[in-house]
Image (cartoon, one colour):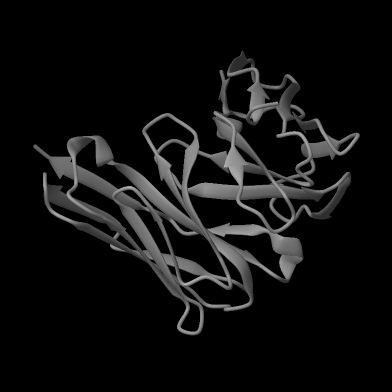
Length: 113
Length: 112
């Protein structure tokens, strides 16, 4: 059974610092891994999608890496801003379980001005 | 459509009533998911559709919960005899079979 863990559960950094969020998963047989952002009381916004054959994806200040063999992904957010404050979730789609999305519990990020 | 649409956005219902929540996925997306998120909690998987079939309904919490999908499009989540513990935001997502998932804004259900 796929299990997804996110560490740390919460993180507070001053504006301008780089953010490093970690996601680990137990079953490497995945189609892809996706990072989401959730603002309080809102739905989930997709940030980056990494297919199983890829090592990383980049979008603006965001960069996500994937090491399938070790079951790890890292989301880097460069030069953090107060607007980056949110909960960040990773989700993996495994090749068994009919490709169901399995989520981690999330990392709650606060960027202080 | 341009994105995943859920309706209603908010629903207040009396305990014991039945409710129906609707999800319109992105056109052409074969996979559809329902999740529940209680206040301050993480995402709780409910059911997964591939086309009109539900190969994984393991997350439905009780037989009061059911869901269907028709025309490989719209899905309806029905909660019968609602209880206060059903109060939550119900989120729907859709994707191509092995593609990225896109979420709707959710339906906030309050049972009073």
